[in-house]
Amino acid sequence: MDISTVAIITGASRGLGHALALGLLQPGAQLITIARSHDAALEQQAASAGCLLQQVQADLSDPAAAGACAAKVMASLPQGAQRYLLINNAGTVAPIKQAADLTDANAIAAAFNLNVTSLIALSSAFLHATQGATDRRILNISSGAGRNPMPGWGVYCATKAAVDLYSQVVHAENHGVRIVSLAPGVIDTGMQKQIRSSDAASFPNVERFAQMHEEGQLATPAAVAQKILHYIAHDSFGSTVLDDIRNHA
Image 1 (cartoon, rainbow, N blue to C red):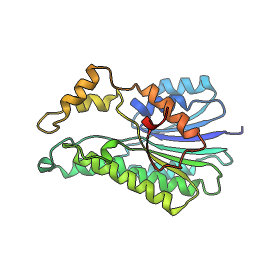
Image 2: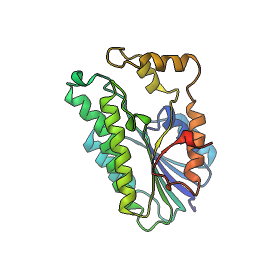
Image 3: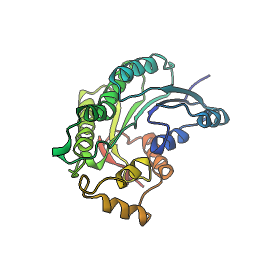
């Protein structure tokens, strides 16, 4: 069977990642999801949509597991697809603490491993596996927090700033891949619930996020996913490396 698009997405079990996975279930496509858990419902939906689905279970906060996952997934990519797409979506906002209280080195390392290390490992393996393909695209889900300091988010801001600069480096190296580091806006996900449950002493802006939720200012994962998938498919994708989905209709 001729495959139109091969898409790989991390953090596909919930929130924006799950919404993106649902949107990628197209006839003639192959979707590879990477998450900690298996999604039986997604398997049924893929079968109904006529989309090949491969679910890979891995904890990307573990560097060894992330490396093994990257090698396994990229070695299994089919040849001859019209488009190859990698969406690095998995991420964590924890630990949320003021700089003087960031004393748990294991928690800090886990956040960097998930938000940065696994992203780089998967991107490297993707570049090797798709050499020679005419249309290959990498979308890294970043955050406005990587571009503006947010008290209490020292680790999260640092990891997303790293994602932004890494994306710029890949673009500068001219691998023949379109790459974008995209801020998706404020979305009504489990991460937002975690943010709203933060201690104000650790995260002074907690009340602002609670108010946004109360006033219905959070976008739904489905709405944002629809915009992102439209953006990925557009010919202009990759022309702006650091972007924000709110810049697009």
